[in-house]
Length: 142
Image (cartoon, rainbow, N blue to C red):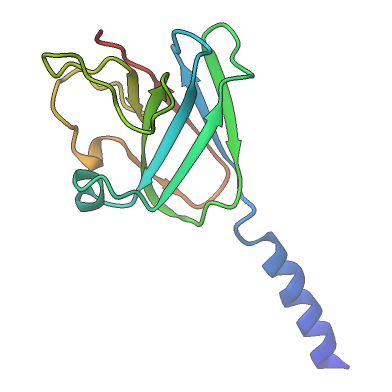
């Protein structure tokens, strides 16, 4: 009987593991066309190779004054950096003009990228072990 009680406690504790919420406040979307793509990276190497651990596609149906709030659950605890693509043409990749300038918006978790080359993972990474809110400001060059 004692084992059954301990088992129930462990089951109840286990149900709460991984239940933390990650809220992503996306600011500065220019329209409600297309979708937002979020790519979760765990280190600089995966980011440079563009091989995210987790990818999420989010509808822009709930955009309000160019902002969108996304609440995600089921994300395992760990260190992440999120790269955002405002995929207006819904082709799954960044669109560029003839000169190689991005035609769609992009952004990074808790970091407003001002340069033209990829940022370092450490500049936009964060630890996710409890409920957390991050902000991504979208940048458009074109």
